[in-house]
Image (cartoon, rainbow, N blue to C red):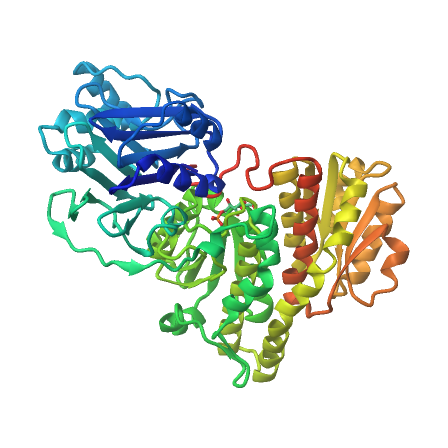
Length: 607
Ligand code: F6R
């Protein structure tokens, strides 16, 4: 989705803006632009990658140490230079960049046109520029406050004005915006990755707040101009976490990070001696959770797959009725929320529009809300009653990997937290905690087979149709394996319960079609073997994810990726790893940019 970066200080703005835009490239975008103030406003916009903008800027670099930069992911209007940000007004030399969507932009635009404003783009953002201009009478901060009082929707904005060459005004409602505080300089961004190279001291604006920044300091106020004092904090992020290091892609880096990220997810939360799980974020709600009558799990994409595993875990281990639904469906179908319902919103970014809306819908109907979120301070994290952070660090790769395993592990811990307060014995919990402790080293072991996984991928990479099949806990893993493959390699892949294949999809199986089975030695192993035979006898090529020591599987599968033995409820944490590697290799072998898949955005903040 769109990215914002803005700067005021004494250094040249353009290099800093470009660096920030590059760091946010992972979020997905289709055009980019900057505006710099130096006596007059200089605006440069291009369609395509930030490198295209960089080349254009090199022709005649705008000088100045106050500027704003933006990467746009089209929502209102096509991908064109005219629609790219920054947008300007037609009267006062105002330039604006904006993340979010303005709901009442059409009526505002009509009124502004009636008052003589000429629009150049199809965007909702240009409407805010014109509106600020209407209110401008020599004080940009006041004009921004007044304009935003008229606007409905979500925004994070940064605004410049030719008449105020030493001022930058920013504001937010419902879209993230962080202000990095340096020595006589400020770097503002929608994502901390664009700030951390310059300063680690930062504060966030709350909804409906405006901040006026000059080189001398800042003033934060409400839309009604009441001053507020923000709390400056240390950013929990270091450069190493957001740089590639020795890896070619962030996706590969993050796949290999999982032993470490999962250790961090568990750190201090598993008490082996007493056989219990300590989750500070939900501790105060423990009694309410234990008395809950049902859990509703929700999310989108990969987070939905993790939520599905959470449903199985809660029912299996904690014996609590649970069901999972796409947030986008839940929010519009007039759901029944009985007393004692808990909604669990699963999200890496914490900003996914549908998940946020589903959460609000359930909360309004009386559900207790729990967030299983990675990004600290994100909208979902702020709006839930309680929650458990994933703690897997920033996920830059567009295809979610370490966040998925972090979500599954967190839901596992949530289930154990509940289970021990209901029916689970200390012994059983202790045993599962011991196994969880082993997960990082087990993943290390799987990662050692990366070369083998690449070689196997090479054999099948030119096939255009794949199936991914699994049962029980590994049915969601099949869904996730298929999603990973299609989103970055553009190969058509379907995931489904292994038994469902017989009810139609089996017709697709032709000679040589790759079919990936998750065939670990769990309670449904024999059934999966039957399904393997059904595919094999129709010419499908079998790639199996199986348990180390399984000698039988070699007789049935063409290729096998082994994972260490583990209890079935924990198996998704291991079985998904070879599928992540397979997808990543397939995309690289087909020559695709793994970290910038076409049409995709890292966090989907639109419907
Ligand atoms: C796939 C992927 C997406 C996200 C989905 C939800 O690799 O990353 O399917 O899982 O857009 O995003 P979050 O978790 O940020 O709510």
